[in-house]
Amino acid sequence: MEVHERISKLEVKVEELEHNQDITESHLKKVRDNINETNSLIQDLRIVVAELKVVSENQTQILRELKESRQAEKTKHEDNVKWIIRTVGAVIITALLGLII
Image (cartoon, rainbow, N blue to C red; front, side, top):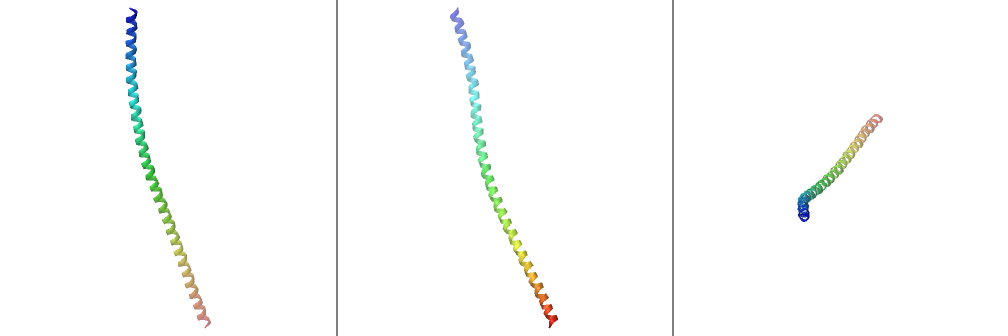
């Protein structure tokens, strides 16, 4: 009878091991799925980083062009002020000469 009890206990152990193996395989599948999802997210992040780099470069170029444009406007304004000063000066000198003569 003792042999039958041991066999019965071994059969229960085998069933437990089979059940544990099923659980392990299920967990392993979930881990593989998670790895695949992680790899996909990493690839998506690489794309986003590349796009952000392009946006940053575009922004830098736009800021550079804006700065150049502002400098050109400032120079133009300064030139206009100089022209006005020269013109007013010439008018004043002409008027003074007209008074002297």
